[in-house]
Image (cartoon, rainbow, N blue to C red; front, side, top):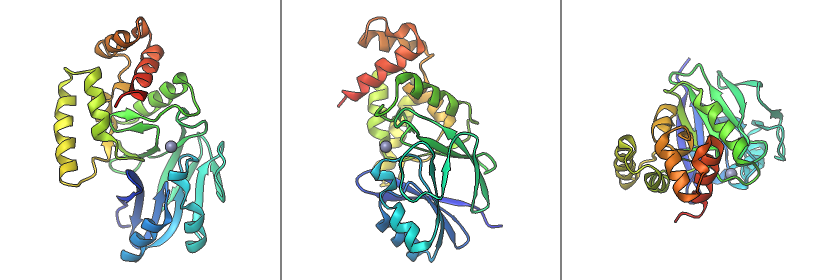
Length: 259
Ligand SMILES: [Zn+2]
């Protein structure tokens, strides 16, 4: 069997729709817009077999119905959210097979209440599609969840192998790193990452995928145990750094107002 290849299809201002191909068959993750997907499928003469959705936001599912009807693809998405025309509604513990690869479903609420991730452990390296929950050097806004929920979701993702490729829904990396450097100005890995990400964007390249290992070293939202991150939380909100969840909450609300 040929390899599974994963490439980004840019959409809107900064979304990535992930295109998975094996031979002449394809699947997409979070097709917010049908148009760029149809163009990519036609250019590469691919047959769309499956559509995966991580959460209900329009910039992730806006193209789902049009693609499903045009290609009679099977649509998979979150059990606990309202997404039109899903064939399979999934939650933690469910397992699907797409283009010959097995994906485990992980519940990662916080950004939305029923947000799910798709994790392919058997791919080399393993692959994680996590929508708007874990970003490169950041995390999604808490539209429908609590800091406790989001922190638990990020903790679950932190358990995955360090080599896991992280395919997020947006190209937010450079702005996220700018904020992360406010939290941890002395983090050497973060400084290196800042230079690399800026250079990649200058060349017009995506900064994704990331890896779980790199996020653990540089993403402040994955580092609520680290003394420097806790100290930064306390500096913004006195006492916040005393506990993990209040550290997370303080940094998340700091980021909400950060420009
Ligand atoms: Zn979203």
